[in-house]
Image (cartoon, rainbow, N blue to C red; front, side):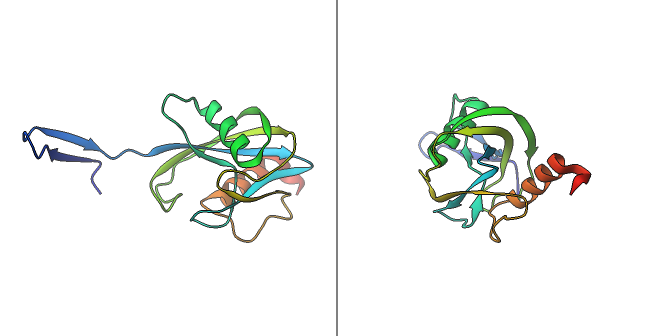
Length: 151
């Protein structure tokens, strides 16, 4: 798969380059009510996932994380910081994305919204079987860093 293609304007013939770059996304590990929040996706790929989504043009990663959390969970989130960035080309079956994962604390009433069918709180020991994208790996990294050798 080439990163760059040469295209020509069908009217004037001017040649230009089209670049295929990864798309920036954010995911948020929200601490809430003794666990972390996951949403059940309404759209493919199916499964439970961390709240998150695409970064809008002109939006910072932090603003995108707060917006996506509010849209999908109804919660106001205070970000704790960046956890890690995940960039495997196959992490999202729809296209190559790069996700910056944030941690944060949720306040308010948990309500599924936007493209979330349900929103629920899970612990390391109660994660659902079907988890979308590479979020099982992200959660394993997170719980491993939180619990370390205590588990």
